Length: 247
Image 1: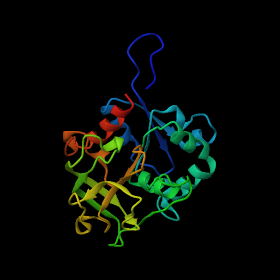
Image 2 (image 1 turned 90 degrees about the vertical axis):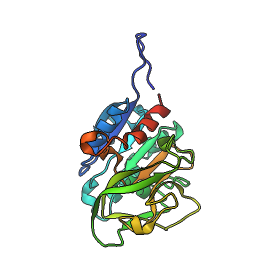
Image 3 (image 1 turned 135 degrees about the vertical axis):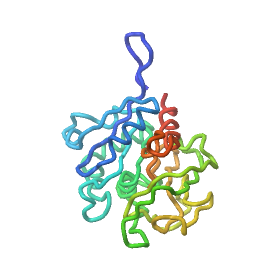
Image 4 (image 1 turned 120 degrees about the vertical axis):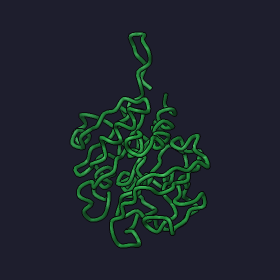
């Protein structure tokens, strides 16, 4: 967290959200971070490319949902390719500085494509795929029970064994391989053990975290559950945990 050099109260942690062409959940994520006590900067992708802004200036990074670059080729692939080949230095610095990163839906897809998750290998070497839903179509479920584990993840601190309902909306969210000793599973569909029959995509896994506990990706949308008008405030718990980790 950045300190106020004038001697006043410490500044709130800065959450930075890259805005790729096609990203459309960035404002919802920004509101969730703000409601959890962070300052937020939505950064246009071109500013990262020309080094006007660096992700390393942030205390937290959020990769929002949507359809980055229209999800051409496959979901998140083009955004991940640019991160790996054009902004690798920033990704490496994020790891070195231990800056927590949250990816939701398309953000999770970008993370997996870029090798940030499962997080046990080098950037650019991806060991998993978020494949097409078994239904073969885009699934939008407004209420689905998600069960959380802590497992050392900063984003699920205080949520071990907790469940609440969240919306999901994706066409490619089935984690392949279906199971791996390298996965640090922190969110499952339907039960704590995970129930593929209650999953919108056919995988029991809704979210995983990196071994160091700093990088989490999940397909459900916690930023769509941050106030009573939108079905409840339960999604704020994830953002509050992340903000609390750097406050």
